Image (cartoon, rainbow, N blue to C red):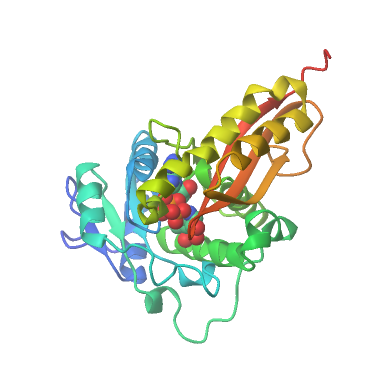
Length: 296
Ligand SMILES: Nc1ncnc2c1ncn2[C@@H]1O[C@H](COP(=O)(O)OP(=O)(O)OP(=O)(O)O)[C@@H](O)[C@H]1O
Ligand SMILES: CC(C)(CO)[C@@H](O)C(=O)[O-]
Ligand code: BAL
């Protein structure tokens, strides 16, 4: 039986912060039992306009209480990555959630999410080893495992993710389908700075010169999309040339794929994805492209 909610659990009109997974679960189950929808927005915190957009998209879903999770998930960081350095700004994250009229923030500790002795994880399948997964072995096992935990804890009706992490969004869709999670995964287009750079919590690592160089990433996607009627080879060349013209950018991968991240089609809808290092900061970006028209 779901117990009635107290003011400490959930106060309509204000943001309530929970750290304990069992408590959050009790609250969201009570909300669901009372006929409300729950929209989960998983984040690693250091919230920015991209996260605000996810929250706003969650707010417009019918009859929802929005839950923003803030958790820097150690399981998705490899050795030598920026887990220790990753910005942790819970107080200002909660302020942003309050401004956005978020109902619940879930900010668990690592031990709350990973009690000692856990051995079972979620395997993403072959796509988990490509693109981001090739550069970050084990990354998507860590992502899907924590997302599955968040789904079980928050019991959401909807889960909202950004297209900025396009492979993550694709794999979360697949996990929800393949493992029968009873929820809808909602994707939100990438929010960009006026000069095109995709917003990312890691942008704050960039020096002035690196910030300038980083505009080459989105410029490469635009250059590729601009010649997309000419086909895949032209798209990849235009994007490569744009990146090569910026010495501050060290390309990791640039690939054209189908929208589901299978092999790219000769014509029609495709996705151009890239990752690059700018100084010591690794950034990713992607864009939709419409390849060829079959006329040439
Ligand atoms: N610019 C953006 N536009 C839309 N969604 C975004 C944007 N940046 C992040 N998101 C989404 O926010 C969610 C939480 O991502 P996260 O907290 O890792 O932020 P981030 O800015 O991507 O951080 P990082 O720098 O670690 O990649 C993810 O679903 C992610 O795709
Ligand atoms: C989905 C997520 C919150 C899981 O830790 C993370 O990968 C992110 O912030 O995109
Ligand atoms: N936004 C993706 C989280 C990560 O890079 O680990």
